[in-house]
Length: 157
Image 1 (cartoon, rainbow, N blue to C red):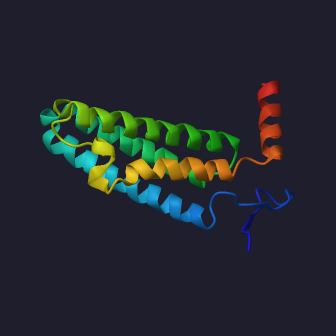
Image 2: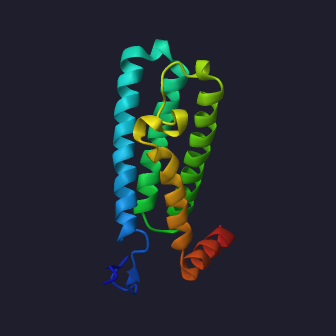
């Protein structure tokens, strides 16, 4: 059965597009990764930042990206949908760039980041998760009604 949400009493019910079924699992994995990356980066920065400032800063950046992606996947509306695409796209780029650099020039990252070696320290979940996230977003696009309302607001602003 499709879960329905009402934004207010006068608005018709609309399906909750990304927060059902596999979408809930995706959000849960993003949430767990956000907590793990946040905890890891906090401890790294608080205790040994001087040893690998680039790596630990990138871990903190990854944590922020995972937090923002989690929130964007949960929230409704065109703006949040776009934020989800941007954060997940950035996450994919980060995993590919940092993963490749960590293999090509290991000296750049004397300590692992969340995205080192394509997320090896996290069972390669950072490499697979953005692919699944982008697939999920593409499979659940904004309804035409939501796009039109957002475009109307942008045109009158």
